[in-house]
Image 1 (spheres, rainbow, N blue to C red):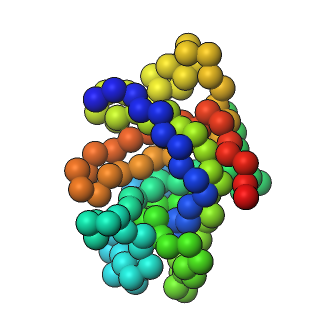
Image 2: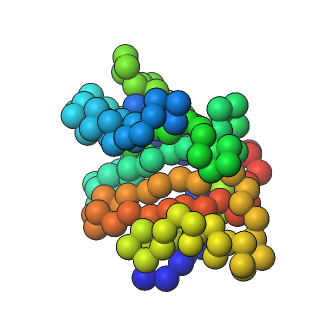
Length: 155
């Protein structure tokens, strides 16, 4: 599959939050908890017209929570969760992030590593405009790296 250019307006993710400060394996622990507790947020999830879930996100932001890239691409916050309807409120123990709109280059994980995706962006004259996001397409189970190349105007 090729690299896709996508435009994603502002969206909401509700998930389990953690930090790189928690050490190795923290992302897997977050996903384990999020998956085990998924029934708690299932009714809040955004859905496509065919009723499939809109998406599962490994959302990232810097420690300032301004959706800038992780410091040195190694230090920041991570939210393992699901795309939810606008205005959804998280249950106790869950965290809600409203991710600003961006234009992304979307790379299939089966074909690109993180470092290869970043190199591709730079080699093609683009800049990284925010935190990179991981996306899983529910109908196919395919995983993607979404590299933001332009922040959308809010409005």
